[in-house]
Length: 337
Image 1: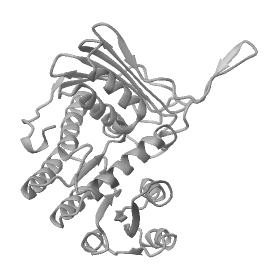
Image 2 (image 1 turned 60 degrees about the vertical axis):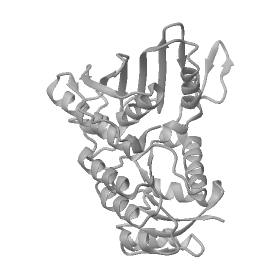
Image 3 (image 1 turned 90 degrees about the vertical axis):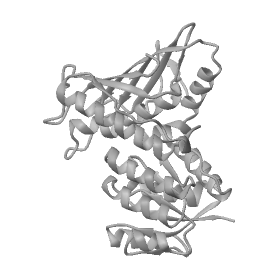
Image 4 (image 1 turned 135 degrees about the vertical axis):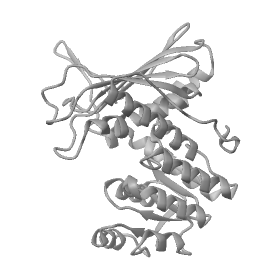
């Protein structure tokens, strides 16, 4: 039986998830949609046989024909919508961020803890990428010894001409590396520093680009993350972990390499959807499977909270130029592995 999904927020990522659920994956259907733009919600619902719109997110969550909720609205709305889904006892997939502040994430955790049941999955899709999963399997095999260093790069061809700030390089881009480092290393991040290299001439006015984010883990491993959002040439995500007796790195994502006329070349992804499309497919398929089985897997509310706390520390480091400790409480046993 299909999991009947209600989608809150039908902008670009919401519509992409609807396409995924209805055309690519198995075990799910979209029965209801809601968006602050009622006309857009109506247009989307018109293309979904049997689906209907709701004027409010609360009404969608209360709909008896909605088994599970997918939150793809803008970040400041997440807390209210996720807490409402928890109160209704419905599994909820929430796109990152879980909420814009660590305090809001804490309130979501408190609501979930009160139910005694895991209901929330956060959309950190890199954990579902084949390359990162192979990297983690290699680390977990311990054949390379303890991890000592990780080198990351997160390059975008460009950013919108308006509205994108230097803070968002941390909160929107680096948050992916923050989560993936915690997952790969199996430990928390304890401190953050930010360096500001020479600014590219291609950055919009007022944007400090690139940045270097330095993360320290609980065991003493160091991570450098190059964040370059005006790289021009394409969307390029890299990762290499240096261990005691070897290294493991993400492979080139180009499908083929062409050699001709004394040159060789490959393809660079256009954007994040191009690079991680299969990871998004795997993420949503595993969520649907878990909901159907009455379980909840994947990144937890704690993971969303921890990422928010580290992001707060990184933003403080950006503004002060100082190394900033991460003040993370002990993880509740409820979220233990």
